[in-house]
Image (cartoon, rainbow, N blue to C red):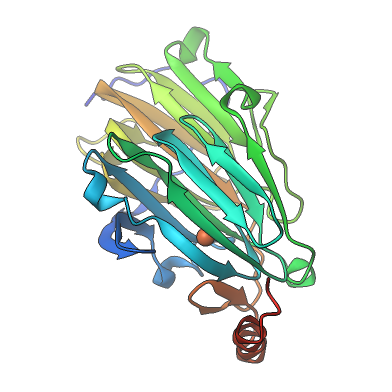
Length: 300
Ligand code: FE
């Protein structure tokens, strides 16, 4: 891991790592093996984000069952494919195919029933699903979704001090490049970063926005390069970035093997969170209502 201090040009006080989190192996849907990186106990800390699942396997038995029909209400799901093909269908008659580099952004709103099934019987399947909360006033809005093709996701390439850094800008903006999606209220930033060995990447962030970086290849260093090992984030780990008063962003420096990571940040809603499985509302009463509406067929 490089500890050489390079000149920064965007930030005067980058954030440090508050905590490193190792994902938990679990399964969901019809036996799909995945790693739950952002778990329910971190929802308050990482508000407005509710869940992050990482999946990555060459073994079809780990994913072939897919995610048959299931409901959602009250939030948004953002699925980002790195490898493999996944077909989704929903109760409103929408259908689409996720291919490598594509994103599906779905706003469940008052409710949708959908399936997410692999469109392959062998080969690699890899990607992420992030759950983004909706403000109380939007939880019962009409459902909506957008399939975003890989070529619709802008790519930023670093120059000068950030030579060797590249970002696929899924949401928000970096270095003046607007991402494929923008959202009011939660103002999500979602970047897929590809960093050559030793490459530096800087991103301004409002101090009150909650942020994390999840490394899926190689390793990187967060913050001011300094004491050996401090701030290092290896593959398969999520670093929760500290919301230090006066901090103006995050600075990432790739290790000797380079790194690939997602950087996610957003403005907290600071509203009560009530979750029961695929329903995320503000109160228990609203959860009972969601379950009742689902049983009565009112989500389809
Ligand atoms: Fe789903």
